Length: 299
Image 1 (cartoon, rainbow, N blue to C red):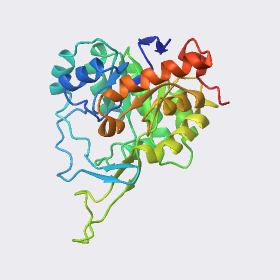
Image 2 (spheres, one colour):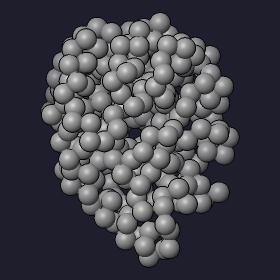
Image 3 (cartoon, one colour):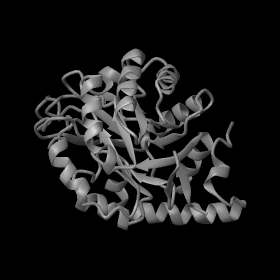
């Protein structure tokens, strides 16, 4: 009943490990797969190693976390070694980033035959050097990135969009016209900040960071709902999902599957099994035979 298919990629259930959470090594990705994730997404990586921002990079707030990690990663050459070590018991999605369409296509080309899908991170709200949301807030530049990657790879391509725009539907439509195979909605909200009461200084070294966790779920849900009504490519929903009820809402809004990230901090990796068990009971009670029957039911 939980079997899900997106872009002809078969998953045993509709849950994915989200980018940036336990996705830095093969060991952590395999760990998530063994604990029930239907697919795994790597931490975002680029052409060259990037140290990211100094600590502190994460701070808890009401309803979630603010983080400014700064796209730290060892670079594509090193990351390919981790991908090679994957058990491949579930589909693998490579999250990549760059500052230009050419950088994106160069990274994508190097992992094209190693993964099932490539997710374009054009939406990180705390990236520097012209990466992240500085691309995803520009519909024309986003389309150029998609076109460059699609010309280069055989893999399916999803674009992870930022909610920090005037009209996310416009960005989604431009991504679709450029040839993307799917859309991932949404990346973290913000940037936001916290200030230490004793020192009167921002807590994060970068001062500002992206908000993730349950607090952003209503916004993520609305973005999925709006985009579903205008695009013809499948949507991967992400943002504040903690239990099967959240998953059901995202499916009803129009997502074909979902990604889970911050909830792992609260629930541990058992969150995948717990969500899938709850979802299976819900579907049985409501008479659904497959998750595809639930997609877009709220429209």
